[in-house]
Length: 232
Image (cartoon, rainbow, N blue to C red; front, side, top):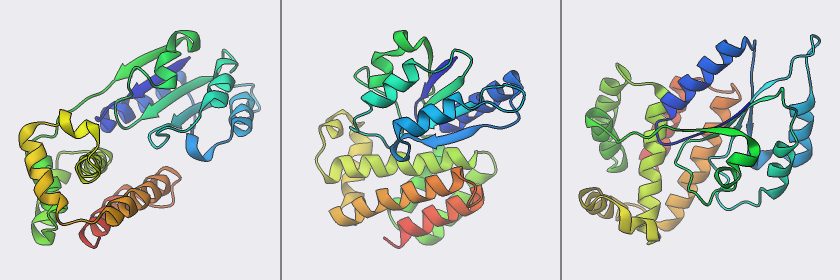
């Protein structure tokens, strides 16, 4: 079975992944970033069984794929064993033009969209962070941690970074932003150079990979992300 799980509410997506893992009785799961995975390696993973003949539970993160050519990856997924359990995951919404969305029917995939609007305390934290108000950012983060999953907080940082990039590089998507959010982001954008924004995307990608591979904990993930933003 293949699931295509996408949207800004990464905490909800992660909960779905864990729930599905328990439902399948899978002892472990394999997480891959599609940008670091060749089609050949993907085939190897999807066709490797354990000593009992069970196929793996595989989560393929396509969040950073952007406009990468994924035709060969799609081909391998179309020919994946029927017994394989696969989640195609994105921490942002995928458009109808996305290669996996366009081919969902052929993949026999179930699509799940988990959207969420930034709310109260999380918004205050993101606003303070991107405004480089160190003390306030940590105060707001402490409030948010009491009720919000660390992955969701990290995803809010990525959301803010994408908005910042849209304004800084005058992306067409900036025209679709909420007028109030756009006005605030335009003000914040003055604090950053284009090179700093590009660098932040690289740093966040490194942090994202490190937490998914177990190199760092959830708490360390947030501390690193916050410090990278404040010191950019």
